[in-house]
Image 1 (cartoon, rainbow, N blue to C red):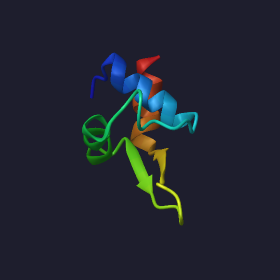
Image 2 (cartoon, helix red, strand yellow):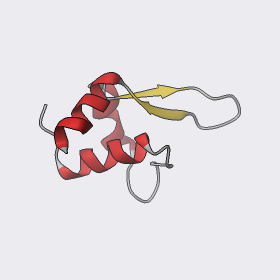
Image 3 (tube, rainbow, N blue to C red):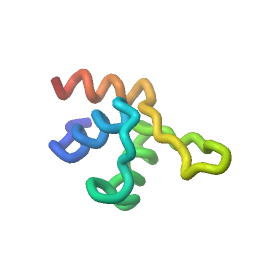
Length: 65
């Protein structure tokens, strides 16, 4: 899959474990990446949850370099 600039930026932010919801990204931008298998949403007790890169997300980010 060819990633656009915004998708690449999103994957880099998730890789760096930065908060991605809010100013830069919203759920309409995150959902396709989650459903596409690039990002995994892991529940964290008493928090909003944590997004992590999957192997497919890491490979896509490497291909974007």
